[in-house]
Structures are given as structure tokens and as C-alpha cells.
Image (cartoon, rainbow, N blue to C red; front, side, top):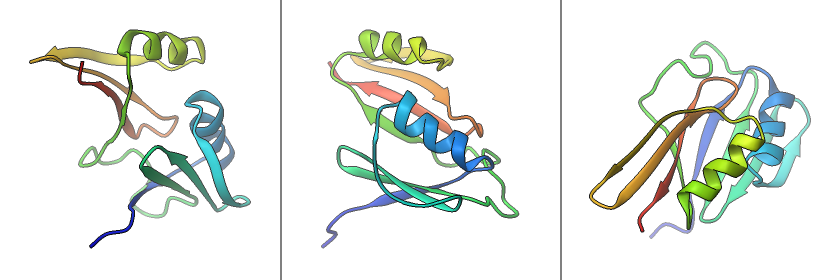
Length: 115
């Protein structure tokens, strides 16, 4: 029924958000309307970065978060730490490992490894 999906992230500082998702996380920039909208691609997921954030503002709600699956959690954490990402919670439950962090606007993201 569905062909693909995406998530939209409201951002306050467009340039900083694009830099974080493309350079820090290493996602592929697919499309950009300068200063307003950028689409970045993770395997199986398109993330739209939208500015201005509007009344809701970025990072105001933790009712949604973006999860990125990795092959090996510890090495992914080290790569992202070397790029300035700060992790605030790393946990394991029934063989699933999670590492939580935020983008520059405070929007919650996490790495997940099911090995």
C-alpha cells in the first residue's frame, strides 16, 4: 500500500541542522530549497528539515523520535562522538542496544542495534 515514508523535523537554524544531518550523521542530502527545506536520506527513511519551525518550535515535544539502525553500536557511537555528538542515555534490553542523543534543536534521535 505505501511506497515510502518520511518524517519532517522542524528546525530553528537551517544551516546548522543541514550540517548536523549531512556532515555529522553522514546522511545523504537529496534535495534542498535554500534556507527553507532540505531532504536527507537514511536507508529506508527520508528526513525533511523544515525552517522556519513555526509556533510549535523545534525540540518542543518528545512525542516522536528518529531511530537509525546500525550494525555495531559501539563503533557508531565512537564515530559520532568524534563528530561532536553527545549521548545522554545508552541502554540494553533483551539484546537490543539503544543510544539516545539530540540534534542541535533538541529533537530526539537514537541509534538501535539488534545484535
